[in-house]
Length: 452
Image (cartoon, rainbow, N blue to C red):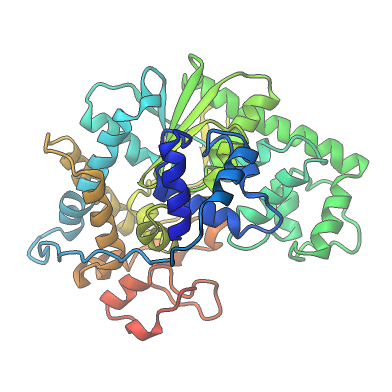
């Protein structure tokens, strides 16, 4: 990736890189775009990443000699953390000594972002709740709230009509760990009362030909009208909830969440646009991937990632995303998933899926982490927080991995039914969600780890 960094340095010298983009971030984005079929690189990168015309950017790139060999960025050596074995409450000790410093550094960073000043700030529930609490802990009295914006509902609300096949595919295919079945699709799209054609069996998985047949059926008159009414109902209920939380007061809103590609922010921007509401969105995330380019390109607002932005540095972003369930579990809330909204705007939640003992451990862990945030201790620098996060993912101590490894992960869109962090499922795209934890806990040997 050396030649892409060389191009990024030249663009930076010319003042072409956007505010949150440095040459390393540019290089990750440029490499990501290079792997996309049929995409002209600077048509996607300009102007959100590179502040010039696509033609001018491409011309400058063509002038730069691609003579540098790619060099992998070495993963830094992480010194072992202080032992926590002597603690009477390992979850609480882990929260204060291991997770708390990262959470505190993130919160201090958010308050320094240029686009944060003078706008409402909300944590996106469920996982963004503890991040919002961290912002309040480092700046007591700050008016940071929470809103419920589940991926499934937001992506549904962002569908304009049966002709919006991009939106339909986002909901039914791209946002899921595996494609939806016909039964799941008609439930999400409010089409349960419509008669299915014979070739669309409810158990059929939507892929290739079956997806095309399903989309063709949705475009027929009765399903089309039912879909339009359902999606509009979802949009209005989301907006009613945001208004009830006073999140739309003023002309801008900052969303705080774990990450990664900005699908909720992009969907919310579409919802606001469809309903004729002129509101600027921004997102502050623990980590963003190159997929965030699509949100930036679509006009969904500003975004910045703390531990990594647009996939850089890759030595942290790649293992983080590979085992993203670890940090999402550390940020988990005790509430069940969002199902919908009451007419008052109050969220309707499903039953909590996590076992009560795990919820108690996570609550103690988060309480102590927030205690660290509010203790007035100097925050880690961004680079120190990156090393600390890498240590949690890649170098857990055996007692830490054994404690967290008992937890289950409960995002239905991502993994279907609840799944243990160290549970091994042969044939799955990722046989183990957190392989380094499984190694540290003695559940598997290092030679069993693959790149899948």
